[in-house]
Length: 351
Ligand code: NAD
Ligand code: IPM
Ligand code: MN
Image (cartoon, rainbow, N blue to C red):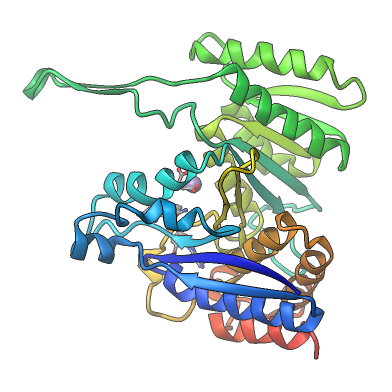
């Protein structure tokens, strides 16, 4: 029997509602397939934890999380209690950076039966590969001067190593898919790190003659996601560009509530972390209408990256059957509650 030790952090807002749903689904797939068992431990790290303890996690928090195969996260952030920069740098970004989760994989594809917000949706299947450790999300900088002269400065950091790594992952993925990599850039003289990014992209492209490659400016690319999503395959972007594009990808899927994501540690030293693309959705907390699919599809990615590709594919197939038959929450225009969608997925998983 294989046991996966999973640290679950429901976090804030709807994170606490959708996490139990995804855990119910994971317990069920393990039961149906046999040979696999989950050992979950829940960590209460959140804005409420901060109010009680003055920190988003205890001092040994990272050590404790490092003992697990994976971290499974709901959402972090409740600005009514703790300013976002404290909660996010104290938990979400801390885990991504200290666990060297340098790659963030964010698929965007049209699930059957979901009405995309696009005027003329055609089948699209995109994966955003986001550099997840540096770029615009650096801590270098600060605030200088005071009063009316105050200036805030933040330096972008692009290392050759991490940039190459993201691009290599993108080409590798494309070789197993439609064979196209699109690089998100802003090299038109505006942003000085981007010619560097482009040079590395050209170098890596030259090493993959069988994969088509192209660069598009981030602004035009964001529009292209909406006008020509079916023309895209793998899109590689810096930390901020990847963040923004993955929300555009989520929007064309019909709702940010369905979009999954995996923060991957590639050197095997620390766990990877799996979390949906969306946040804590304070506007719908407590109503029972949060879409559980983002967290459940994220559970599918957790299975996939823990060596359970067949179970993962089975789960995605069942998610699609359920959306195709109209079991959808309000964000998708449906009438079903969060738990009803999960119940239907669990029922159809079998046994
Ligand atoms: P958000 O993703 O929480 O919400 C944006 C919109 O999408 C809202 O209208 C919300 O109701 C809707 N939505 C989100 N998830 C949904 C779901 N599962 N089902 C149905 N509708 C859903 O983004 P925001 O409002 O910009 O941020 C709220 C808080 O979450 C902030 O503190 C932010 O920093 C944080 N945040 C955290 C993460 C994360 O933990 N990974 C990601 C994004 C934002
Ligand atoms: C995401 C979120 C985070 C990010 C925030 C909450 C720090 O938007 O996971 O997409 O910018 O990476
Ligand atoms: Mn985001």
